[in-house]
Image 1 (cartoon, one colour):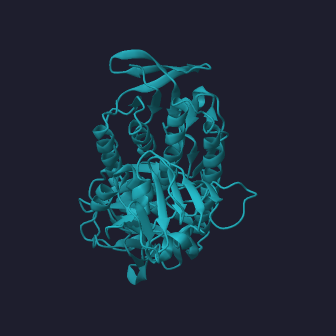
Image 2 (cartoon, rainbow, N blue to C red; image 1 turned 90 degrees about the vertical axis):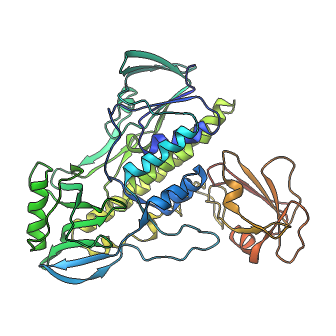
Image 3 (cartoon, rainbow, N blue to C red; image 1 turned 90 degrees about the horizontal axis):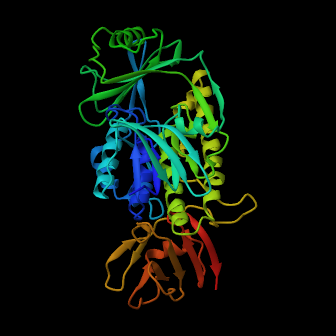
Length: 472
């Protein structure tokens, strides 16, 4: 059977999109030109909004079990301990924000968890299979794939290019990738063991005369690996070049690196696709935008691209394609904002501004909104729908996110009868005795967080953002 959607690229973006579509019963194929799965950390910071996405996809427990909190950084200047610092201060969970802190897990581990979830839905990634050509018309896309069995022509309703910064799909449809590459700054990044260091902490080694230029070693969950980031002086990302730069900045001789599991040379490459859609072809993730690593935004933005696009493609395949145009409008604006944030953090770091170490809540993704520019006021269409604790008539509790979880939209009625149909709920004030099927807003949080007066009705999109709100 021909796929309804063909996904090129099986990184976090492509896998998230695959899960989103497969759980809605959409026939998909997901291919990747790599001969084997990626091994390495690359993007290892999971931001709070992405944790909420993973909650909806059914992989949050696995991600939390495999990962760990962001480690405190021990700072050494001229080989002497100079203090400790956290990149972000820990925040306490609230009813509205149950996952308020970033989480650490290597990208290859994240991909493994997402692949397992996709396999549960009956889909397997096809490796060593690349898009080499494509044409599209009003009814679909014809794609030529090169795979283990030779060339294959595939017909699909839609094609999504999640195939990285060098995207074949983007080039094939002629979408410009606007931005710049800075060849004056090169960094060395990799995953290594450093058994002489305490793996419970991150470590920063620098010289006192230039404290913002140095080597960062941040612990990765499992196997006692550290992610190594440092200036690159040797063109080759090898153990020897990594050891040399560590010796240079640490002033120590006891820090012996193991052979890197993965290593790469990196240079700032900041680019944004001119558009995220051409006809029936869409771009997502690094194919649409590439970021500096500062702020930990690249993987997270790609996952949220997929989360935005998946339900809209499913709706189009079900006969309503009116939402597809909003993918480019909504996600390109977010990507542009995030690129600006990441670039600003990089510029501050390069200039020696210590504030670049404090990433703050701007990087968390919890303030993303798709509201129209002329909309004002508290919690309007396009804003993130908060979580909250609700109590059933039998005394048990349920979270608002539990109501949202799954591929459906959700209709909330505050101190008003629930509408007919599935996924429609009546939420009543805490001073009321709930009838069967009604949910009590514990401590009134849901009313306060949704700015809901009696009679307010709110439709929450499948991706957890408000579609509309009405009174009466």
